[in-house]
Amino acid sequence: MVAVRGLHAFALADGMARTDPAKAVRPPAPPRRLPKAISLEEVERLLAAACTGPAALRDRALLELLYGTGARISEAVSLDVDDLDLSGDAAGASGPVVPATVRLNGKGGKQRLVPVGSFARQAVEAYLVRARPALAAAVRSGQASPALFLNARGGRLTRQGAWGAMRAAAGRAGLAEVSPHVLRHSFATHLLDGGADVRVVQELLGHASVTTTQVYTLVTVDKLREVYAAAHPRAMR
Image (cartoon, rainbow, N blue to C red; front, side):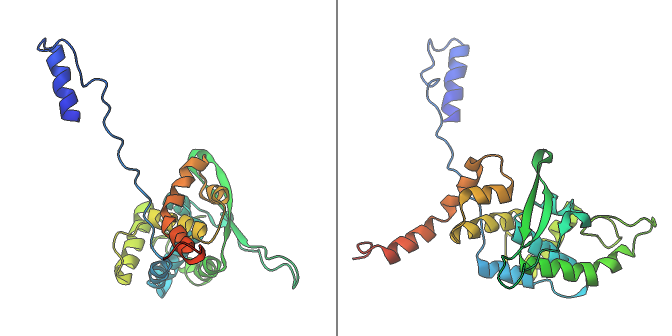
């Protein structure tokens, strides 16, 4: 289509044609690319791939936090320790559970408060107690970094460092094409599969418009088919 339009435009400009019949023809819109998500079993394999040593405890906490909050990789590596509130707990035997929270700094400087699930909380606490002090001790400047996730030199973990940690864990788990954004997609898809409202998912992801979030509802069409086939009396012959 681009070649045909270009040829007719050239013919008109060069005087070889009086009109451009292709000018009003618009190329077809490309198909909307659906977000890639991995299954819950694959997520568990990925998270289990980092389990020992200071760096491994950091990587486990990083991966648990990415999947547990839907954070972007840039939001995760920019976190400071003070952005975490791990004091949430059960508010009594009959009271509601108050989850831990993390303050994420999204695009355009927009902040949002996201709950931190028990698995991510336990992983982060294990990292803070058993691994982060050892990483912080490696700093040479004498000034401790406020960053939550530290590299081997005691400084803030970079995006490239976080990507490397994920690639290593994915390799050990036998998973291909796994990225921080895939975990974000999986977070949203699994929430919707579990019955979460799309506007709640919008707030958790930090999307300015619900239209951006609605693309994830397309991913769950297989889930809708399964429910329909199992529940509708005339779905199967």
